[in-house]
Image 1: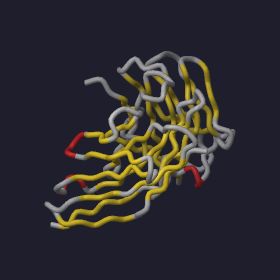
Image 2: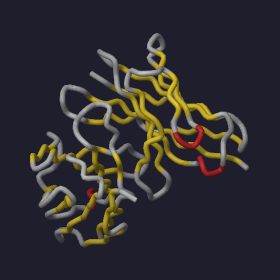
Image 3: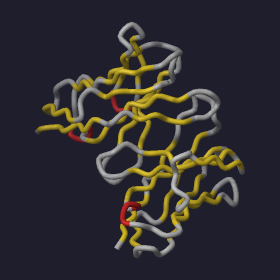
Image 4: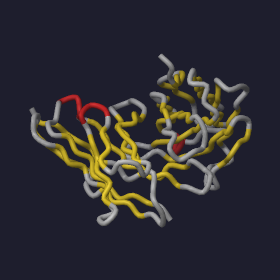
Length: 114
Length: 114
């Protein structure tokens, strides 16, 4: 089935040690998103790619970066994770930016910081 | 500016009884509204969407929602709750203006009692 796949499902890293989370999609969608979701909160958009165009949310910390080498893959890089970065990270896609196109979510990567 | 308010942070019902999850929206024009469900340690799954077509929207798993402009509401209902419906539910409005940014409600945790 076409889907959004996130690897790994669980990631543990040390305080200050760079970490990369991965997302792939078989939907051939133009837009890919990264969200951060902390416990008992709604997801918070970090940034999105429309094709190769990167769009950063104004309040996303510089510590968070993203790469999209091709249509199928998108990576979230956290350069120096702090304890406050422990969260579920969700990847989503949409066909385009039209309002009637829903976003399709992966199952997320739960990041723990030691 | 668009926003959504979920009126209950937690709803508890017995299996086989009706479910009502309440959502009010604020929008300066006709909004695109969604309901997403999130099971524990999973991503978000689209239940249904309203994009200015029929005001009564049918979704997956027996859920439906009615868009009421006069009441600025988009409540989610299901006639008979099932144990598998226990999850977090998010009412979401799409922020327009050419960027597909989702604005999430605070979430409602649905508990199903046997």
